[in-house]
Image (cartoon, rainbow, N blue to C red; front, side, top):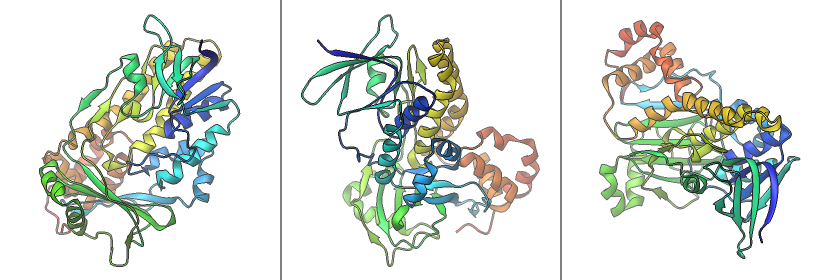
Length: 410
């Protein structure tokens, strides 16, 4: 017979979102089981651009994670963007900063912080093989160890933090809405790159794209994000194709004295996935709720933030025997309201379609006018909704500078 344990919350997945939820629930007084299929406490996600946007900085402060990231040498960086429609966008120099830190450093730090929080029980090396509950309501999970011993972990709330291909979502029959992604990514890590360490840079070539994200220990991630029309070029010789595109970045990274310190990592399929963030007795956070184009570096920040939103919406109901279903519905609506518009805009652009006229106007405006630039920076770093760009006070500026060709494009 499997052994059984009762918790307030069982969280499946001990990466960014799962560890954030575990720590915040435990700090609120909950008894938490944090389940992770990997045994290695230093395990980390490999395929990730791992830039953390400034929108997640308040969550990082609240977690008590900020000083740990500083000790690890995380880079405080601001967004910077280049397009053919005016060159570099005029983002404010005093904009809030995000973080640049590799997942190899970040994941173990976040996991150790969560596991060390009183009230969190770490359950490593366990794979979820089933869900508990009946009549469509999830009441915990059944897990299996590497030697095939099974146990059940019952809980009032089950949290899926197990990635874009969530096992919990499959078992609970909560499918994702999938939107196509017509770009792919190849990236590598470098040391000694000549690029501003305080800038997380992206290039939007229309239709190709690229990114240069500085991290701790003088490590820089350089990514190419080409349209799938160039897939044959990469399949023939990925090294040459990668080098060719990086060499085309205007004001690109100086590699003359740089050393590549990783293999070339590629991912050809990156479909955009979004599912309802909550169902009966179960909630989804991080990539399990929303996995979108990695070009804009939103995944890590949204993992931190979605976990925080879940805890804030449900902790009272969870611990004070309130209406948990109503609390989960509030979380579901808040998640959709805050991230749905961003996701739809990102997914639409990820189809590889040409820039639309209104987008070209906004980009030219942001390259020529600091007020438009500041508005776009707040949207691009996900501190503000995309509705910020519909503010009628921006219209005269866009008409004045956004409609004229710029001489700064190169």
